[in-house]
Length: 86
Image (cartoon, rainbow, N blue to C red; front, side, top):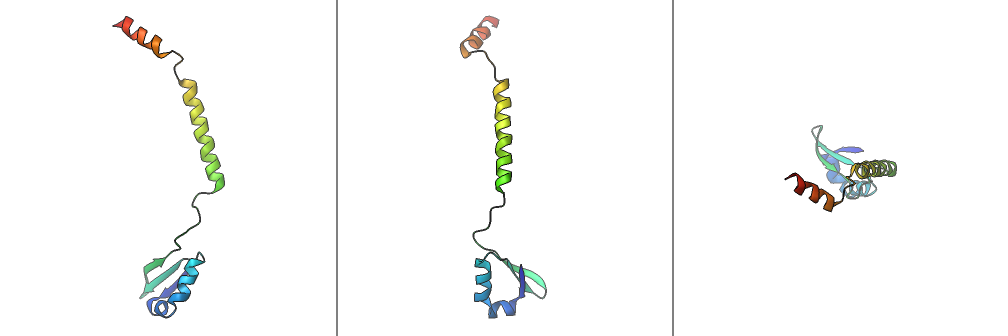
C-alpha cells in the first residue's frame, strides 16, 4: 500500500495509476487524513480454493442429511392417510 499527499498525487498521477494497475492500493491524503483510496478494478478472489472445497463438502453433507430425513411414504399413501383421518 502506498500513501501520498494530494500535491504529490497530482504530480505523479500516471505513476500511481500504474501502481494500481499492478495490483497495489494507493491512498491519497489531505493534511494527513485519507480522502481517496485507489484500488485495482480486478482484485484477487477473496475466497481461496480450499475454502470453496470446504464449503462444497459442507453443502454435500447437508444434502445427505436432508435426503436421509425425507419421508419414505409415497404421495398417494400420504393422501390416502389424510383422507382416512378426516
